[in-house]
Image (cartoon, rainbow, N blue to C red; front, top):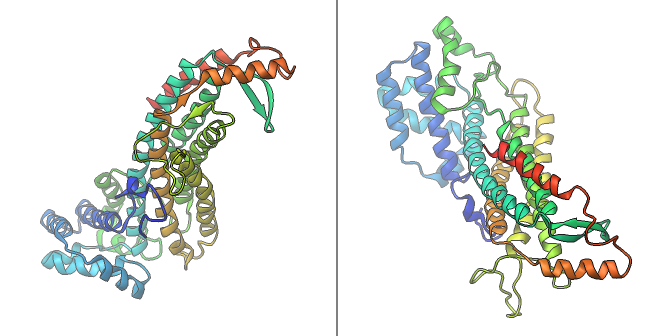
Length: 388
């Protein structure tokens, strides 16, 4: 899919596009050849030959996509290409695996790398929010509850609440378990066990070590908690960023004008109204926040249909959904980091509104912001612990 209908998708280049998926699949196959050495059923020379073949394999991606239809996944035709390229070491290619082992592990690899990118942008966002919260710790603003003016608050506390959401999302990413998948044809690991005997037990750990992923003591072919947890964590990210974007959009309306998205040449223009400066980054982050929950729900629907020892269709339904969610969260995180870094706060506009509300008897006065300052400090301290 092109990025024409997904503005900003270039920020997620290499996250889960076909080139990235192919590279991850080949990394898994090369790592498995090394795992077979640990199990005692392949030689170092064979593993090296497979790794070289994987690194140098020239794959026609459109042709591979067409060939994937015949097997229901891209792994089967890719393995055939890799075996041809490996020559005498072909026996060390994919031996003991099933296609789901390779594709699941490849998707976890992609998720691991995407999560790292998202986390880096969350740290940038959180650091900028901490500065905003500290700078505006005591700047009084009108609080709004159920769309109406309520009591005084501070803009610092509002930014601190944004920061707390970003911190919670970061912690969810940090808590993810990202293990390899290895079960063989029906989750029994039978083929390698027959060949290697006790030595087969070394293969999963060797695979995990080669890829920098966690180990899995049991295959998870039909237990899709790994995948749904990734989706849920990424959706927590877009939820938190969506709140920031929604508040910026509200507070940036001309009749409120308490914040403004930073002006960047060439951004935010209108095709028919040259006087406009649209808050494009906030709009796009909000759009991502409205898409992600449905994608996460689709992962759960697929998980609930993961029947037998390997699923029929439910597993296949996960792939494009997870890929899109990885791209969406990566894009939104990059946009949010830029949005917050450039955010302009108009404390004078806030003060005018507080005075107007006080004069109308809608507020108790500008000085009654309760424990807001201490809460700001608490949020900043918590963020410092989470970001590391």
